[in-house]
Length: 348
Image (cartoon, rainbow, N blue to C red; front, side):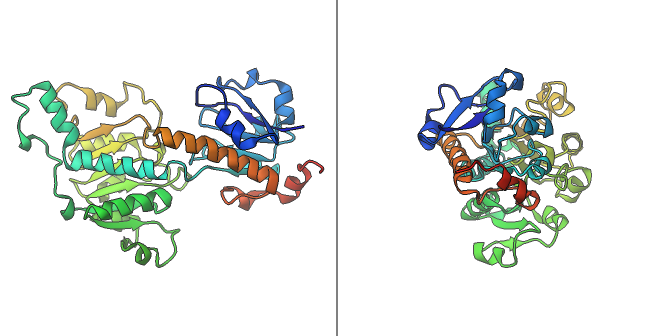
């Protein structure tokens, strides 16, 4: 009899055919799109050995207590801040993410946002759309610069941060990074520079691109003090997690001219309410922020190819852990109760 894997908040239309092709006859799927956990049958909760979730549910103690047979929770995505790692580990449940499905897409988006500001692409388009004659003026966009004169700073040199750094390097920019968890010599392997501290990086970079997970350590990493450490004409790019940037502090820095521009693909609350001070200032007629802020709708990860990768890779991770008992992408290995994990394994 096939073993059950529960999908409580799928983010795709149509049947889970890509997942079914991965699982074959070994696993069955119960998929729900509502994210209303009470609509899922109690029997599915009771018998599911795996849970694959997106971002619309919080996998906490209450959810895990519904799943006595569960051995693995897989986040279909990179971030896993919606999963209680401690609660899962205490129950012997491994938590895995899908870290590589959109690496190139997010890196491309970070560079695209950078180029949109440093080459004025969006602003020029908007000015010409508003007035094709008066807008025909190359000097109207204050953020335009020659790329080879700029220092590109990366905060967090993981998979996406590395891919972004290499793209910036290929464009002729000087590239520096800060990541206290990267081993000595990483900079030599990539041909870039290591900053000794976050303050060192922020003070030297013309563009600061964020590539950190959202943790207690990184929440509001970029706030008033960090923004004050940046160059007054610097550009901030965030394709990581919205909570890494304090949006009220960012609004104040932009409004006061203490920061040149910002490009955000992620926000603290998504979508951000229209009455948020940053959005109000940005959308106001004639706003000085109009061409100094770009916002995209958490789209950096997106391409048709990345969505296929996400679905297939997350399914392979779930199946692999249930079959083999381990995964390279386990993010709570340090808190996983292996004795309880073994006790949850079905008898063969």
